[in-house]
Length: 64
Image (tube, rainbow, N blue to C red; front, top):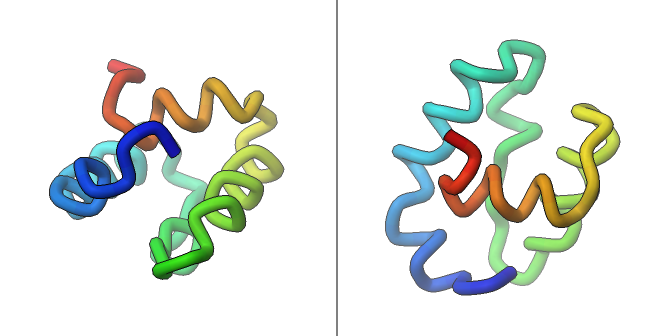
């Protein structure tokens, strides 16, 4: 991910926005686990039918 430290710092806020926009996602879908960032991106790609780049923008809060 582009800036993992920045993402972790604002993850709760970003997670809430993502859940509002994509109601089909659960807390389990949005679990950010140390060292498993790629798994999170892959899970979101599969569930939302988005590209890796689209998911990165969404997770970094750039998809508004």
